[in-house]
Length: 566
Ligand SMILES: CC(C)(COP(=O)(O)OP(=O)(O)OC[C@H]1O[C@@H](n2cnc3c(N)ncnc32)[C@H](O)[C@@H]1OP(=O)(O)O)[C@@H](O)C(=O)NCCC(=O)NCCSC(=O)CCC(=O)O
Image (cartoon, rainbow, N blue to C red; front, top):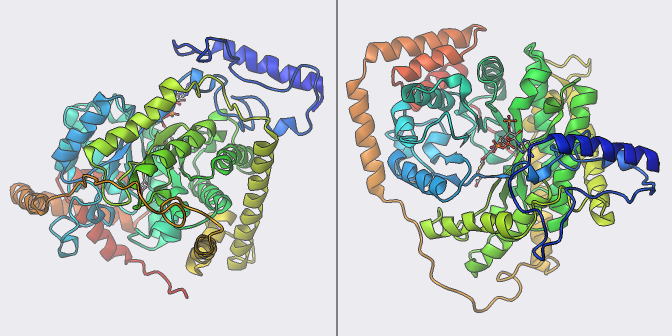
């Protein structure tokens, strides 16, 4: 790009920066010297390919979504939390909010994630263990007791039974007297990554996609700020993928949901802002920063050029980041604080919109209160002390980071081609039921391609670790010393007994005929083409449980069994 064009871009950015709101904060160095909100080539310099880098707040958004970077608003500190019953988790949420947490993020227990009630025999021993147990709208009410749902953004990490759980959240808001149309938050809902990595699905992909389409339609028309999908690479990475695979599979899944919305006749400029993303921040500092920058650029280009999105918001890739659970070690666990801080810094330098920092004991158990506090404080140290939010995309223009960004982008594009090619194999006539990328994803799920590719990468890394080419402190290098007793959070089995007792009492107290009638009406919608959110909300209002709703649908649609892979 020639020097004049670069200067014209700088003036455009400056005008938008001047017109934007900034935080009341000190934007100087620790020594008191002023710093610019963003840096670029020196006036008069040319820069080949600068249009791929650009300025913060404009296409292709490599350098961030906002002209102000974090000067406008810092990232959201959003700590993923949940354990035991709704009452215990409600206490933890109040602690997080009181200590400066910016939003909530609900972790559900395994039975809830699988759409089973706490009194289901298959739930035995799991209730309240890896997250909070939620059986019905009444539990959701307790979960958010004294937390005004209209004022706090709430993320819920659940995908198989995302839609009934979302209905419970809406009913809890109704019962708080909050107008559901003002709600703001994120539901994970990403079923593709369940088949690819996390493996918490309920049905075949097609009925799941139908439900997700209903949800997208409902949110786009009635709850405009709510983000019904958090397209997730985190679990793909944690399963052992490379950074480029994480990026490419996740963005491809995002394209799949865009195609789903388009196939339902929705307007891309209306529904696309409801798609958000969720990535891992692993320990290779620069590779991760490059991944985040490439993610924004690829998404903006595809949204504009392939799917016809016109508004900036529909071209924006907004993402939450969690530091890499898989990088934590049980050996010398205090070192995990250091790893997490480095990973969190990569996320921030990559321009994350929201961040969870892992607690040092998470490789052993759910975080203790003390470990959870250190994790929260880690973000606050970065935010308050380091000056990292003063300058947007401070690594933009680094030869290394720019080349890494280009390389990851090119690797991702190759993977998109492979996915589309699989789609064409499934539909050689080019008649894709939802869209070409979706066909490729479904084919890749069906024939085990994604899981095979991830397993291959995980295997290669493990070999490198065992040969000592890759080193992990406390694991294959610097192994002695620095130990210490950790206080481990243990969830009492009493929680399960109490949850089952309360659930039994609620079932006794409700109007069974109303529950049955509402579930039947939901099944009528399932068989026809009507949007299922309305009837599902009615079932939830009648205190139908999550297990009852999911079982009715399992009976209707059948369950999914993974094809065996070797
Ligand atoms: C979009 C995100 C990513 C972030 O939403 P947030 O509300 O926190 O932040 P945001 O949208 O970026 O910002 C809030 C508002 O401020 C505005 N805003 C932000 N920065 C600005 C700036 N500089 N200038 C002007 N406006 C700005 C935004 O546009 C937005 O307003 P508008 O709304 O008006 O635009 C959302 O989807 C989210 O919160 N996701 C979290 C997902 C999550 O927690 N998942 C946990 C998974 S845990 C898991 O899966 C478990 C893994 C495991 O451990 O196994």
